[in-house]
Image (cartoon, rainbow, N blue to C red; front, side, top):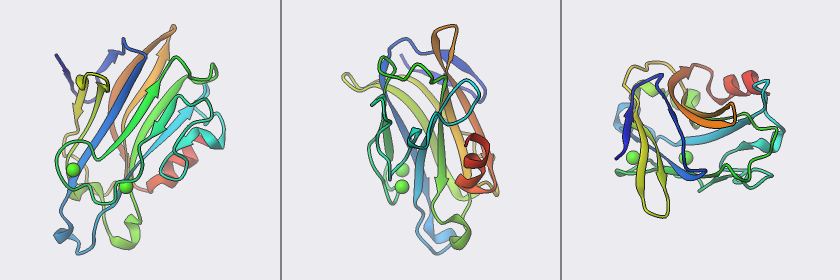
Length: 184
Ligand SMILES: [Ca+2]
Ligand SMILES: [Ca+2]
C-alpha cells in the first residue's frame, strides 16, 4: 500500500533501489506559450553543498559520477497522466560523502515565457519499485504556489545511517539559479 504524504511529512525508505516519478500538468492557453518543466537533482554533502558540479543531475548530465542517480531524460510538454520525468536511485552505490538528494522542478525559460507554478496543476512526486511498479510513497503537492518558478518537491536524506524521504513542497522565485546559489 502506498503511503500518501502531507507537506513536511517524513517517512523511512526501506528499499535501497527505487525510482522516483514526477508529474505535472500545465495549461499553455493561460500564457500562450508551451511549458517545459525540468527535474534537477542536487546531490549534497553533510554541509548541504553539491558534492561536485557533476553531482547536479539534470537533462544535460543524466547520471551522477557514482551511478547512484540516473535521470530518464527531458520531457518537453508534461502532457498526459502519470510520470512526466523519472529518476532511478540506487542508494547502495551512493558516494559515502552524500548526505542528501534534493529533487527540484523548474520551469524552463520561465521569465521570458512569463510562467510560474501558479499555472501548474496536478504536481506529484512518487517513489516506486521499478521492478513491480508498486508505489511506496506519494506526495501530491497542494496548489498553493503563485510566482514561484522552482519548487523542491522532495528530498531524500540520511539520518543515523537510515535513508528517509521528506515531502517538501517549497518554492523559490528565482528559478534554478536560486537553488544553485543555495547549494553550490
Ligand atoms: Ca522537461
Ligand atoms: Ca502530466
